[in-house]
Image (cartoon, rainbow, N blue to C red; front, side):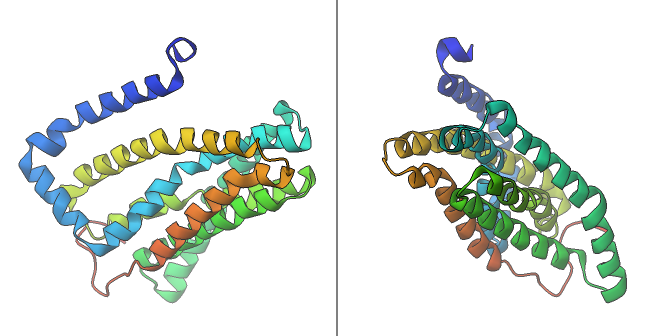
Length: 247
């Protein structure tokens, strides 16, 4: 279907289905819409939106990296696909072993609240992806690409940490509505971000200087930099959030 009708049309049709399926939740049910508006009136929620928006660029960047490495460094497509393997290994180590152990130790040893840790993880994650994307773009040889991918992959937990953080300042009755709104927001981000990356790379191919082939990664790094600035504006109140989270 994608080859016959075009990927954009297929994606647009899929997004239309998502929006239609959630129309009752956001439009027909006025109480859900009211809760949604009340939640987004919280400045912290507004500052968290860029984190979710740029989160959709993670795998789009890896997909672009395979094409970029093939064009600039003549790296085989099959070899470039190992960047996905590297990303998976990094995430398994971080989120199965390192982060849970370190988080548990910090909470027990220093009595730091979970939302403070989640906020730190959000800020650190988007910062790592900003630095990682920049490192990929500035890599002068294919041997340096794994280092940039390692840094970039280390920030893949931004979405999970952001969802955990948001849950602290929204009431339990509004969580389903907010999570559905985030899903729609991310779907719209995919509709814009994925084709946008391809268009940027297509434009970069027209430049004579091979340095500008990395333009998509510079743009991605800039997006994550803006998300990091937005995340730095999030503040955790002294009192416990309205959510039903338990320590």
